[in-house]
Amino acid sequence: MNPRNLKKRTKWAALACASLLLLAGCDKKTEPLPDPPAPGPEQPVDPPAPETGLTAEPDLLSGQEQNDQGKTLLRWSVAVPRVLLDGHPVMNAGNYYDNYKEKQLLALQEDLLPMARQRLEDGNLLGPFEVEEDFAICRNQGNYLSIRRSGRQYTGGAHDSMEEKAETWLLRQGDCYLLSLADLLPGAQDPRALILELAAPLIEQRAAARPDDFYENYREAMDQTWQDEDFYLTKDSLGLIFQQYSLGPYTSGAMTFEIPLAQLGENLAEELRP
Image (tube, rainbow, N blue to C red; front, top):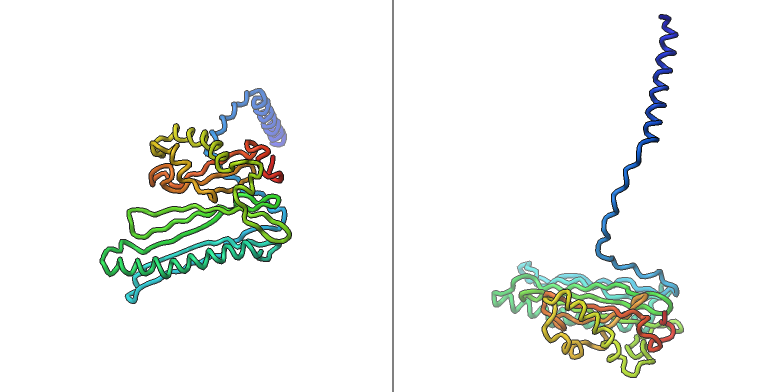
């Protein structure tokens, strides 16, 4: 056979095979895609971008103290908020956190360091004392900046101690003003009683799901242990902080419960109403 004719036949045969394969692929039923994986625990949503130029950046204090033999007695890493408006410090919030920073440094040097030295001399220093603090912005929207701070301290006991703090600031005429619960709920006759009443179903629901996290008398402990300054704002809620040991044992840690702002109705400051 002529080689040229053989080459042509081979080419046409290849094209025919390719066409058949393509048709077979079109006729084939598409396998259904597997179901998407179930969503995991809801992740915290980042606070919205600031609308007013108000923000907070960390002012980090860190260091350690050793004895003459080079043994570490105390370590600390404390991030204190530095509140800025258009990149410049604001006076009221600045003074508030500067005072806090000075108290922390004083406590480190005059309380914890001497205690660690004494433990070492007594032969029962289990490890260096440690202090850690950090913060997160829970709300930076409109004229409101709400900051939640978490602290951990180890002083050689069986376990760490934890503490949560929070501050909510209102921006007015170029400065920030620290708000109380009554400032946020001017329409409530008794702001504390109102939010504890609204928080009660949330707490009971969690206690029913995780009873080991709560004392048997947690209902009575709610009113006795909650401090009026232990609250923060998010975009959609008013959060309450119950400190470690308030409602349950050490393993429960600090607990937070968030009340939707919509439930607060006209009790809420007008700027915050949904």
